[in-house]
Image (cartoon, rainbow, N blue to C red):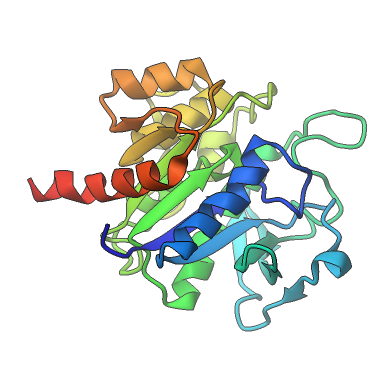
Length: 271
């Protein structure tokens, strides 16, 4: 496979959060691709349960300082960085006191899902894309993992489609099992509006977005879809198949298969 620039947008990465299928792949996939000489960048939210001192996170002043307007409110974007020494992978963290700060991942300390999870996903998506622009780095592939990255494909193909950083980028979404139940509220479509990402593009979706609806949005605006785990959402796997999206089934030994899948997205374009 020709060497690619691959942007990994992850909901969770071990060892910064507890081990699970999503967080382990969040570390292992960038590690494997970097070992195969691909150039990578890796992002995740700076969840409140991440120990900054233990993880040796520090703020990147030159990348921080932008304000993102969501729900008519300015939210400062803070960028931090750290390295997973065992994997030799650098991780950029998207932080904000309102959306992340001292707050946990999907649920609070009592196990209750956050009412603004949808807004958090919007902030994360825009924060990553704006930071990549600032880095002046042009990815060939954007690989999204976790519902928190579900808005990214929509933005890449609409609001950011004319940006030099993303104009030729292929987007891949990995599917996992359903992890949240609460919907994102009746205003989620309006909150997503940004540049050419208009609410009228969302008329075919339910008025209220939830895990499945966000997954469908991600699939529709992705160039390829991967079943990342054996128990990935059947609803979303079936939806991707029905939409005739290039779909890679579960691969336990994923290195060669993922590389070939990335390459196939460009091969299809050349036909």
